[in-house]
Length: 144
Image 1: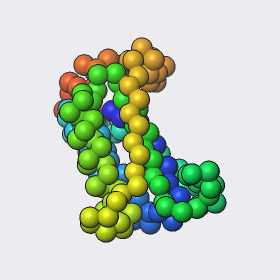
Image 2: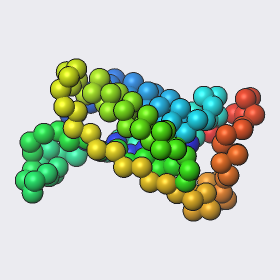
Image 3: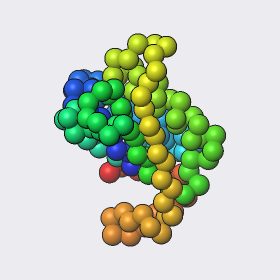
């Protein structure tokens, strides 16, 4: 049930590309955590896109330049594992390459940070969840 923020300069993604990327990141996030792909589980993956004017994106102390994209992925501590994180880095980078229109073989300027949050520190609907709550929902549980 990752909570993902995608930070990018304005114009990096078309509306259609953003929609397709959100769907793909949802599946990647759940697969990296070894969670089921039931509609309920998919509804627990939230993705926020934040676009910034190119003049407000700095690297090397200067605005403009390469369209660097960053992902902030928040997940329960222990999810994903080290292998799951490597899977996440690889698949997210490839998805961004595809939807940002970056040619195959080109350097994909993506930075990904995974923050592991203890379940007691993750408030949901006025309470908390456990890893078992998200790993073993009923297949017919209604999406959020």
